[in-house]
Length: 336
Image (cartoon, rainbow, N blue to C red; front, side):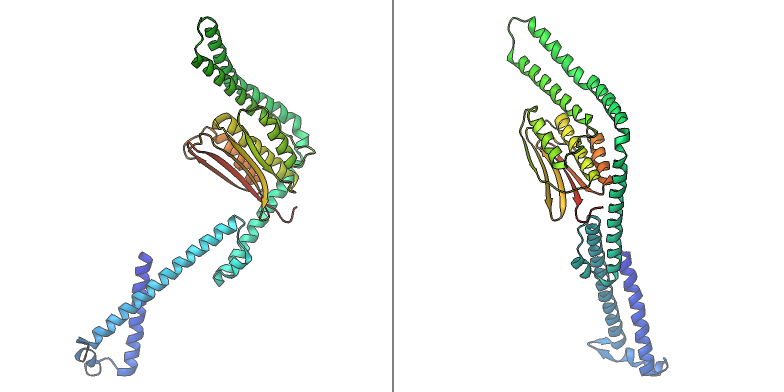
């Protein structure tokens, strides 16, 4: 608003200056004899000078309003184009339709983002090439982490189940409600165990493609969980680093679902659309508030870090009571 008034007053001053110069040229030196017609003569019941001032003020106001609206529209358009460039969705025809002053900047921004994405992929490739040298150390660290998790979570649940079973053996009549409670605790402990075991695969793909690894992982889980897993997986040519990171992202997402979601349905898809590889994992579990719930923050942080390392775009959507969706997109095209 301040910018609008500033333009208005500036334009009014410029218009008044221009009119004063024009009157000086037409009427001559400003004195009472030459310039008196401006206030002595009337037009539509008002002195000509007042009429001129109204015209100047109105013209300045309309011009300032037009300039402000034009600037806001251009800023909005520039913001939309920059967001598309950041998401690798900006096309050449959209750049050509943009304001002339923006075209060069948009092309430079798009080129910079693409260069950085490829650089991240190259760095990720170099990093993946050294993984074999430290595999044993990583396996030991993963097993130690698993042992701590098993002690802190699964062992406590199994202990609770054993206590309930001991109490049942001392009763003559076994209530059904207690049996269901025991069954639920044991099943939850088994899901917790299977979720933790997903973390024991630091180099799970080896000579397999990502599609093969995902399918084997889903088939294995289908035999062990108590709800259906629907999946649609396509063979997509990716670099070794991309396949490794996407597989670990899938493991992390599935682990979070088994441990926290309490889902009864799970969907996994790995497809190619519009020259983009899309990995999507979705469940109908309890969901959580992304801004408040820190239960799965560690797993979500791992997903975000792995996606960024290979230049992917990731999106995590969760609605309490409805479920969670994790989506990771990577641009295809020229591979490094």
